[in-house]
Image 1 (tube, rainbow, N blue to C red):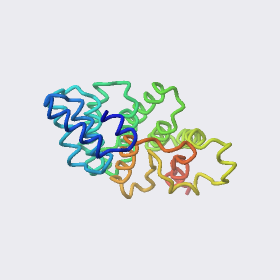
Image 2 (image 1 turned 45 degrees about the vertical axis):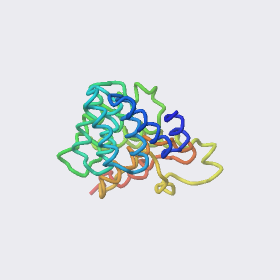
Image 3 (image 1 turned 120 degrees about the horizontal axis):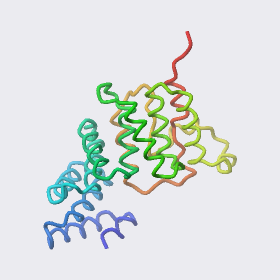
Length: 236
């Protein structure tokens, strides 16, 4: 019942059901995780962290709760801790595409150079692409950012264009006549980070959107194609 309510956007009612389930069965890890998801979707990050942590105390190998914890930490700008949790999630569930691509995104775009690892980001994003079948624009957007971080700008641009095509098909674009650059302010699951001026914003956008209903395909073109142009080295 709680999951059904949450899927319909009735988060307050869903939270009540999850809390009731916990009262009836205090060792019900899934209920803690679901309550954490509801809190995360409402921007109650401290509460979400508390619920995910409770789930993990009961079931330390619970990949969904581990991913949720990483998401909530990233939403608070605690990227080092978030990366640790996502890395553990991938260890527990090697084919978890959201964790793979989310971790790749953070490793490719974080504002702290000590946390960035482009080579590892490429490996993770390529694995996510392989598992997903290669046609997920959100994963391709993360892969484009990873390629850009390693200096593979041509591959980055090609991958970003492909992501944009998948997220915003030509038929839809022709009706609106808007370019990628004109759409750069449109919310998307993976936002590019030109200049990396606000890495915590990128993490918040990526993870919050990942745990909420997906936007319509025509309304979620990735911004990476235009952003890559700002990151490409210019000739002397």
